[in-house]
Length: 194
Image (cartoon, rainbow, N blue to C red; front, side, top):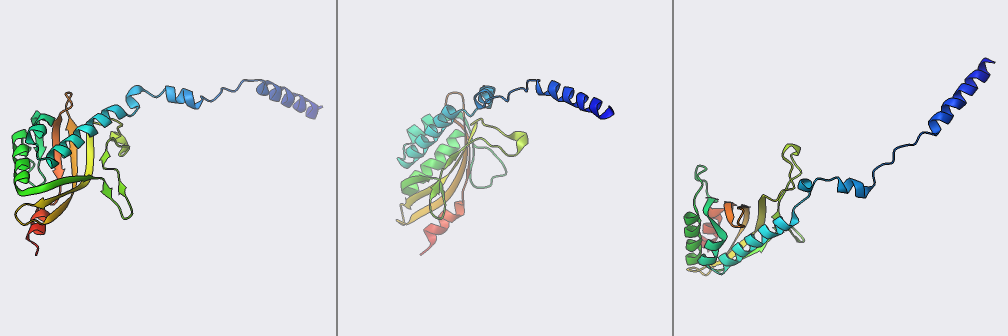
């Protein structure tokens, strides 16, 4: 009798639990819809900033100081490639440096991208998933990778330099802050080699 009671109890328990509705998992579409707009990448903002950076590189190659000046904010902050104690320079300082390049080099060209053994990877990046504490999909800073090539005017030597830069734009779409990284002395070495 005891085993019959246990069996009846088990059947009732199973029947009651089997009749409960299980909550449905959210569909993929519902999960996507719950993503906050501010958490989604802003591809249009990224593309707009990349277009400005490409216009800047093209104006430098064309030695067009007027166009370069138009693309820069009047309050631009620039960190040059050579170490200077962490001092940020101005728009006038950057334009002066670019003018010096134009006076000393011809055929200035920017080859966008990271050169790999068998290919060239993309040269414009933004956002980050690491570290988690500062992960962002916001394209505030654009990381730019590439190679600058030119002909030294006096010696007619071809030079090249791997380059990395960080660009920030203001609300007007102008370049507001730039930091450059490349081997400044490597250019002089290439020119002095026989």
